Length: 95
Figure 1 (cartoon, rainbow, N blue to C red):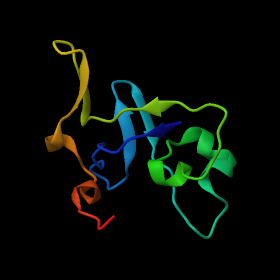
Figure 2: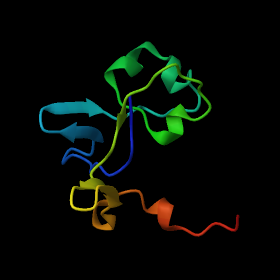
Figure 3: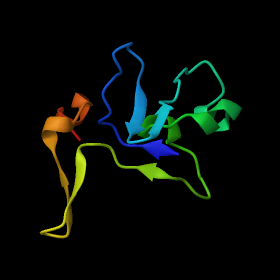
C-alpha cells in the first residue's frame, strides 16, 4: 500500500497515514537496508512514492492524501495546495 503526501506529523514527531479509523506508519526509509517493498514489516506500513519507485508490482493500494479532493460539482479531482506538506513539489527543476 502506498500513499501520496499530505499527512502531517503526529505531535510525537512520528509520521503516520491516518484517516478516520485507519492509521499506519509511513515506511521507514533506510538506503542501507533491504528495499522497503521487500521487507516483511512493510505489510504494516504505508509506502511513499519514493520507496516504491523501481518496483514492478502486480497490484497496489493507493491512498490519496488530504491535498487531493473530489469536487462533485465538476466531477474532477482538485489539489488543495494549503494541505500540501511536501514542499519539494513546488521547486522548479531545469528539466
